[in-house]
Image 1 (cartoon, rainbow, N blue to C red):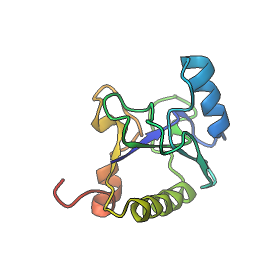
Image 2 (cartoon, rainbow, N blue to C red):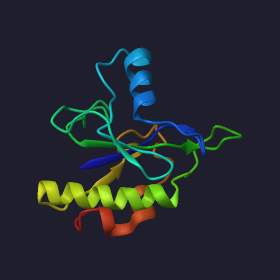
Image 3 (tube, rainbow, N blue to C red):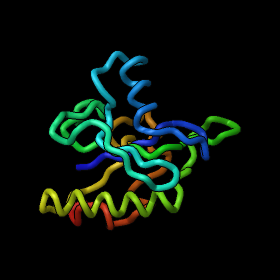
Length: 139
């Protein structure tokens, strides 16, 4: 699996992998950023934790690939909101294609909240948003 997260930052506010790494290392005391990839607002994909290292993004599922898009909350209310930009969506499709080619399989994409009912992350239902494009036929 690949698991999609959001940075839980307001729509339109630019952040990058280096900042998220600081939040995770300085704020959480982790050894590195928890995600393997971060998708910026403009669709740039930055590498986070190397793929060969176990992630730190979803309890019990850190062997899966962690992908985080920047955004995920309303700038006014700080409540969860689907803020995935068209550029981020396009980048996500490309990244998933690359990962599928690398691993030679139909790698499904799931949302963080599928593994933790107390989370709203990535602020939308992955299956509802992308249909069967990113999910396995038997799911």
